[in-house]
Image 1 (cartoon, rainbow, N blue to C red):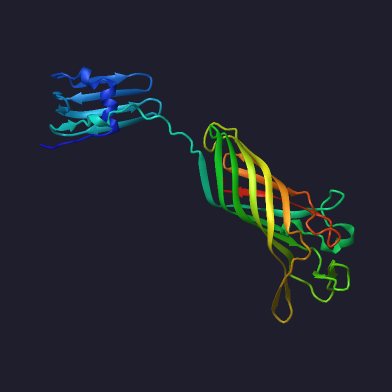
Image 2: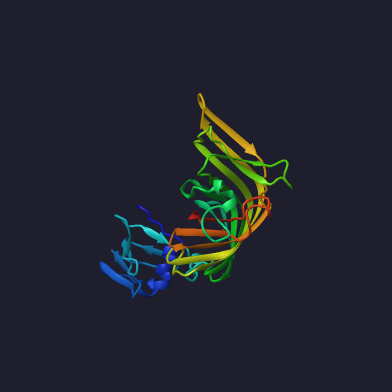
Length: 311
């Protein structure tokens, strides 16, 4: 004789649906055990005998979940038995509560960089016009090493903070080389144009250790549905900078010159993220000058792009 056993939550559904009340010795081939707006339970049987925990002779059992449109069917070809685990029959589980703190490792932002001058337009200040930036070739890459979101209100409002590294490339339009004038007061930054070399790549690269502090609002009805908005502050500390040059001179030549280039050590800016479902865009603006006062261009940095991974 074959035996078919069902335990756990499925059997709990049958017991709570009223199977014991309908169980009796019967030759009825089909019997509706439970039917409402959500579920229909049908048992097809040769004979039925239920003690405290045993049903004998069950041939086919169907559980039809109307709200999801699917059917769970169990069948056996010969007489057998089902053992009910009565201790497992608890109340239906409630939807899990959102986590108070969620952690996200290794997410990224990818976009473009540029600078704003004193007039609010794109480009360097007039006295540093040779350092104008090529926007389409100036990449912003922000690596969020770790971020955490604290649930403030029903997983709809969260406080997000973390630690990351912000890589910024500023590609120059002209063939300039940066240096500090040794005979000037405090070594003012100088951009000298090299007419003898046509650089294939010429850019200033900066790296900042960052700490974002933001409020995030989920305006949708589900985990990934609807509009999302995040806004707040972004703090940075300069941990590296260099100018990278590439050109051809009897073969490919490369030069990487490390210097602080009179860049400000600390920076604080504002960040906005917004999007729909999993498509999230960002924009960052740093209102203070990128360089130290009177030692370099008076410009503010901006960047915009797409968020790759979010919490």
